[in-house]
Every structure is written in structure tokens, then in C-alpha cells.
Image 1 (cartoon, rainbow, N blue to C red):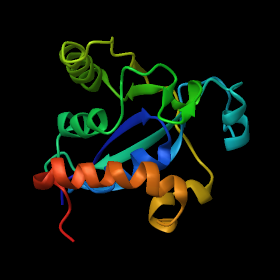
Image 2 (cartoon, rainbow, N blue to C red):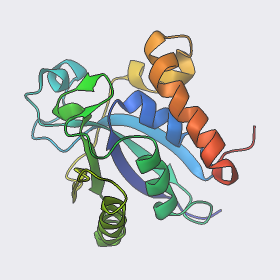
Image 3 (tube, one colour):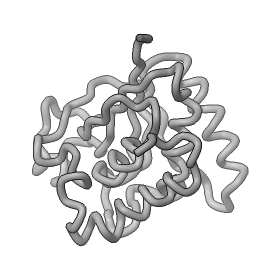
Image 4 (cartoon, rainbow, N blue to C red):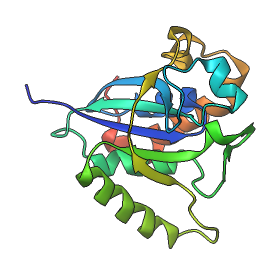
Length: 178
């Protein structure tokens, strides 16, 4: 058994990003939470107020022998619009910003190169923030595995399910076998 590595991504609502990442072979766990702000151990209510500076993010524990960090970035950027500033779809506010809080210099280097290459593909600027991960705060338990537990929820049907379906279709070779 090989070791695992950790990556953190924020691409709008963490329910959607979590659901998309959980589809991937080599991903051991995905935890929804908060990062990029200044408030210690924030609550969902505090993050929603906009006063904490935090973004909704997911922390992905993965096997680097089964899936590379670059592949996680590819899925992350394919499942949200990195040109939207402080919003994704119907979700508006700093907490929904596109952000890659990197864990080390290698992740920073890889993510920066990926963002620079991606910027050439869009008419609008890629606004994804790239910053060192200072602290990750897990979200409340009811946010964990939200799509899995609430597949009939209207928000999940309209926003999370299409991202999951996109991952299954576009990244077939990277998806877990059912």
C-alpha cells in the first residue's frame, strides 16, 4: 500500500466539487470545508456572512500512484468556470471563489503552470486564486457527502449531478469502477 497525498480546491459550492472528486479512482476521501480566510474554526453561518474571508473548499486525499495532482487539477477546472469572480452559477459571494490553496512548492508550481496554460484557452481572464494553504477547517457534518446523502435535493439535481455526469463522461478512464 502506498502513501497518500492531499490537495485542496475551491470551485464554488463544496457539495458539487466534493461529488465530482469522489468519482475519481485513486481518491481515498474528500472532505468539505473552509480555507483562505482569517477566522479560526468558522461555522457555515459565519462563512455565509462573508466576514471570514474563507472559501468553500474540498480537501482531497488521494493515491498519487493511481491519480496525479495534474489530473485532479484537470477535473477541478473542467467542473467549474475559473473566469467567474466570486461566483459559480447561482452561488454568489467570496466564499464561492475559484481557489487552489496549495500544500507545497511542487503543487504551487504545477497549479501555476496549469492556470497559465488554461488562461490561453479562455476569452476572459482566469481568476482562480493560488495561495498557500494556511489552515483547512472541516465543514459541519451535515455538509459531508451531501450529494450522496441528498441525491433528490433540487440543488443537487440541478448543479451537482451535472458535474458528476460530466466527470463520468469526460474522464471515463479516471472514474472509479462501480
